[in-house]
Image 1 (cartoon, rainbow, N blue to C red):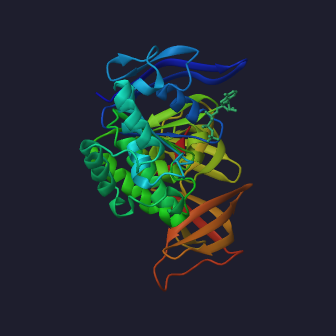
Image 2 (cartoon, rainbow, N blue to C red):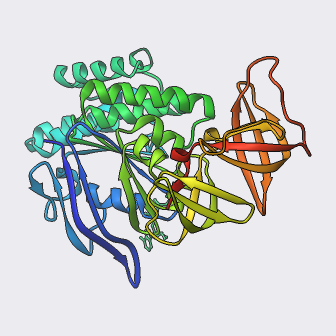
Image 3 (cartoon, rainbow, N blue to C red):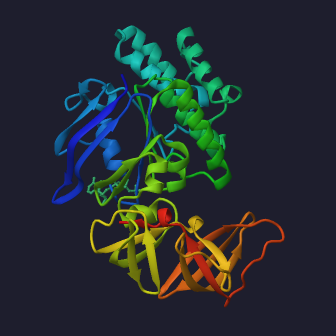
Length: 376
Ligand code: ATP
């Protein structure tokens, strides 16, 4: 049973409240990301689940168990850290076998304990029992490190070290896998391939995983659901598509993907569309307006750029006039910065060979469908 439930959890450090009334329900087998900027409380949430911190108030359940009185080493959580936290003087095998040895140590008689200490101190004196050997090699094969079992971890690449850390967590068959910024120390290319490795292993094993990151692309590409955190609060929980299509606040619109965020005032309604006016624009939106002064969110890829003399039916779509400040060719897309009133809107248009790129200084018409104008 690997579900994790957090009810009304608050965590204070002295006078400072790091977590405000956190509520989360993470399903068994789910890949769940905690996403937010530095200092928002992601690691503290994770540390409370793992048992390294005690919440000031609130309850945590792992499976059916309320874990307040269960120490960290009995919570059945596997941890993977940004720093890997491997033993550099031990080889790959011994690093992975370490926790299994410790577990055995805790449940053995004093004579057997001596042999286990020998294993932990120097594996040549102590021989690993067959069960441990098989289990470690099985997991090393799984993370494709079985051929490096004898290598010191200090001799491995960052990606390989991270896979040792993952193997060390998985070998204990934890109910929940907790990963705190596990990919931050890797270069861009390795990060991409490790994302796939982790996701594939997680899906294969069906292990409930909580993954902390400040990288929205990482969270969006890996997680089933994401909780976005800000200043110790959970601001929104949803699937990657939910968060992208329906951000509940400008903070989320800005943090999850790129957004144009404009300030507007509701100026009436027409044919079921809300009319919003602001500096340099009048837009009609198919969204509901919950207040008169609001934020208008438009995603860059939902805007089209047309020549200023194009004839466009402005009853069917929004049309705003602007001036190109910059165009950047990015291969399959062209990104424009377009001045509209006091705003510089970002517009991404798909590029196919031979298509026209509007140069800087050109007056253009921007079109955006009514359904694509979000009101928050
Ligand atoms: P980062 O992405 O930078 O790791 P985070 O979102 O994981 O940030 P936390 O490490 O959970 O943030 O910290 C949340 C807040 O709690 C921060 O303001 C931090 O300074 C504070 N904090 C964390 N641990 C302690 C502590 N032991 N004592 C005092 N304040 C702490």
